[in-house]
Image (cartoon, rainbow, N blue to C red; front, side, top):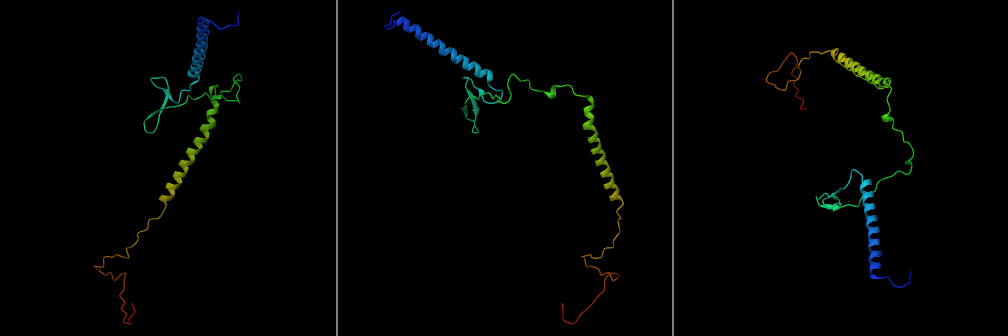
Length: 151
């Protein structure tokens, strides 16, 4: 190969190869972004761009969110899923027994309160002060007259 200038056909071939590599990179990045895009967040509009709506109702384009990866949990580690394991049927009594005790306690407290209110004496009192002074009950009140100038 010579060290001279490249012919126009060779330049076109090199340019096409560079464009093909760049297109492959863009497709790989967009495919990776679509695969890692979380289910919650901005949604693509008709143009394919991510949009979210502001408080004024105006659509604004958001930056694509990145997928969160924990640095503490390694992907090859097996994580525990205790909620998927088969439970021991006797474990439900650990919850039922205290709840039954709580219900019995509330019922007992309600009975004691009701029984205590029933034993309260209801006295009949005689009306002493009636602010309708149409009549004067001499069985309750007495008249007193002072001429000393006080009151």
